[in-house]
Amino acid sequence: MNEVERIADIFGPQHNGKRLIWNGFKPDGTKNQYWQNQNIDWEKHLSGELKQGGNLACDGMSKAWVIDIDEKIDSEKIGEDSWNVDNKAYPFLSPSKRWHIWKFWHKAISTKDIVEDRKRCEQLFKSKKYKIDYGHSLPKENGSLLGINFPFNDHQLPYDPRGMVLTRDQFIHRVRFQNYPLISAATGMKQGEGGRPTALLKIAALLEQKNKFQYLDDVIKNFGDEFTDTEYIKRIKEEGLHKKYINIGYKGLSEAISDVVGFDYKLKEPEHEPPPNLWEGSEEFEDIAFNKPTPPKKHKLEIITGDDIFFSEDVPINWAIENILPEGMCIIAALPKIGKSWLALQIAIAVENALEVLDFKVKKGRALYCAYEDNKKRIKRRFKTMGVKAEDKRPQFVFKSEKLTEGLEEQIESWIKETPDARLVVIDTYVRALPTKARKTFKERYEIDSQQLSELQRLALEYNITIIIIHHTTKGKQDDTFNEISGSVGVQAIADTLWVISSDRKTGKDSILNITGRDIESTAYQIGLDVNCRWLNKGRPGENLESEDEKQIIKAIKELNQEDGSYPRDVVAHLKLTDKTEIGNLKKRMKRMLEKNGLIAGRKNGQYKNHIY
Image 1 (cartoon, helix red, strand yellow):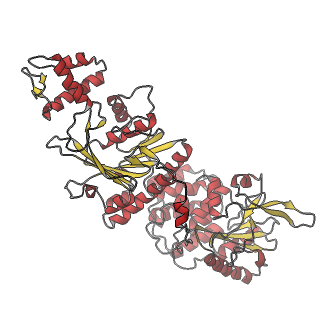
Image 2 (spheres, rainbow, N blue to C red):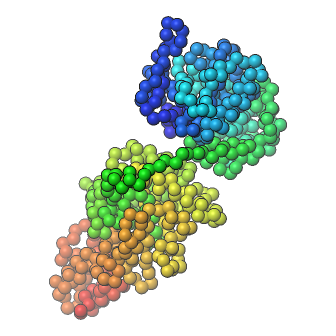
């Protein structure tokens, strides 16, 4: 997310085609505002080009409340009182230069629960003798469509507990870390305020305690001014200067926060150990609080009648490979070193150039290959082996990325949005894309596999593309070939299409590609690699058709008609091959044919002959 998207997300879901326009004040001092049937344009709003507002309730769900304080108050006082009422409350100057107190949730919850929390805080502000305009405090429990002007216009800026203005980046940072009061309080903290170096030590200790020390730079970046003592930061990172605070407890945190905000503050209750997934998705503002989980998000059922479906326009399947690889998520599984990656690369090149794969047509588009087990040197060798020419189009590659559920899905979605005609994404392999903790966990494998793959499957269907995930099969044979896919049945359950390559290395027989899926008929093909390491369709299992390369070799030996047999150089000359790679591949193929009984040895060493039949 960029800054605009983050702020839009913080202020919650809005009604489509509905925005409140604020165009200054009328002569009588009232706001000149009106509703428009258009979506909020957050870029124009944040730039000041068009001041806008909206609702805080959408289909019974909300992510924020606002309390209207109808009086002018010193920023230092309102900052301190807001923090003491609720350390997740943010004072903003209102359009009339009074105050709006906002509170945000990371995920939308029921408006009813939001309203109850707002009323609780209103009573606390009332006890401090604040003048509250209850009519303009939002949202309303009855779902009223009363609007509110959104902040970040002119003077409508957020303030910290010390009464100082926060920048947009600092505001986003504080919302992101609002479940950690010490980090939240230190946002915007300037040199000389509250012993900033000591506060940084305690924050570093807290981060290390939660095994998230890498966020220290984010904290430093969002101080109120530059932390210039780089040697001090170096000592924290390299010498562990902060470690004496590792076991900081409830009392220590309260004292640290008091030092940072500049007034006495005591945490309402001891901070409990957060659940292990507290930090998952922190980029998207995951809301898992220390002391209690957020109530689950509730949605109304979206009812679509059977008649709507029956009489709707037929939408054809968006094929990557016609008849065998539709849009959606596909698992390609086989034993190690069978040639899964060669097949995936062949498909990616075919998509870029609209070439056939396994004798089936391929739809042209852009392809992204996540080659986690390879490097540029290996990919270049494979290009050469596969006969890729300079004029051919080639896929895009990444060799490192975030892990599944830790940002990879967002990275892929960004590529899709930024790439016209995006058609295919390859993840090679599933295991390399898993977070470290998921690789070490073998309990509840169904839930783990479902969690890791469900968002990729959603992306594939939402954007009508194909996402291929390279995976392994188990060593043991199963009655159902698809049960040989490694992991839980969750892998099979989530995937839209399954490709399993069965191979018996001992017998040297061709591999069998078994295919099944939600949008295709189950089928199987006998496949084999040609001299350029491209997979060929050799027909239905049992038909034992030679590859095109093998046919050419057999035909060349027959036409040479040499009694003692033919050397590979004779076949090369007969076929008029000049490319060194093709010549090398042909020699390997002839040797492999001899090993598989596709050719027989000639009279002299290195010679080959056809079978007499």
